[in-house]
Length: 465
Image (cartoon, rainbow, N blue to C red; front, side, top):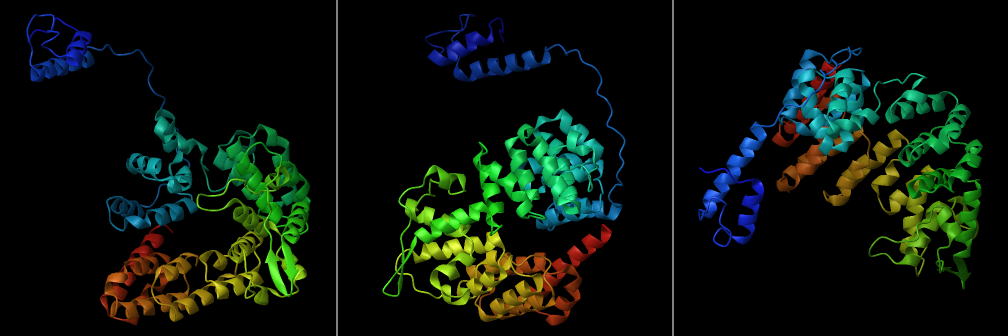
């Protein structure tokens, strides 16, 4: 095969056709032969490339963390191979919480998976160990690892030199011990932080939040990045006596009128710069009107106590009150306000009015499980039941576990095709120590399948102890 011509000749012939532009050899080369020439040139170019000069790689640093136990590592390999693959995040979280590092042969596969699944990255910051960070320095696709927490407890010097994750962990530890010192530490470096770090650090201030934090957060409302301003506004909303809360209370009051014993809601006509500074987003989501969107946000950021003062009713009567216009927006705002402000009284009455998963998170754990169990027993299997259970944090205790397992038994005889999501939640959320209770409850296959998943999780967690 004549290969005296170059790549440019092949490209030119391919673009205009070999009949109009024969190859330099003078041959009229058919299309297939032209592709053969291109393949040959490609191989020759790759094979003939001279090696670049370089220096040997430095070896990976020595590890300081203990390697995950052999049995646990073998189980992780099975999970990565497809067995109970949904339990990967739980395995990683448990192993990272105990300060283990992964077996080296599993690192590349997990780092590749973390490229696609951001949710597992925080766990890998610890589990990858020194070798993982060494690998991340060689492969840009794994560079995310260099921003994650590198050990379960970050040392004090990491505030200046640590990764973003280490610095968040350190700030959290300082905040738990001395809230004022953590705030001052953040204030000193605030202008030097990236927008992503500023938003993440503000989340840390939620622990131990007090009126002492208000002056700093009020200044942050002028930050140039919207996500930072909104995080500060969320924190100030949790302080009923803050200046932002008072401004929102005034805006809420301006939207409420009472005529002939009937409540009239008048949403704002514009969203001005002051409203945007206080966390009101001017542009609504697609399908939502501007005034509707602004009203929801004002209600969500106004102190909940203001509504009893404006309308003279306790929360349990307010949620039943008929609002002729804009009632849906007011209710949506109350739900958001309840979650932001963490008000258990409002959460109870709103959950009774409309069982939403977000409201459960506001309640104490035992009460949350009692409400969820009662809802499961009195409600059919549908999307709402699944959503409510999704809001009940794991691990589920005996009462909620029993209610869900009994629901599985009930549905298995009437709607067996509709069980998959409920069974999955049961197997992944019930305390795995309750696997024996599931085994004893019924020999029916749906319950035994949940029991088998619970046994798998129980064994998995014991191997990591």
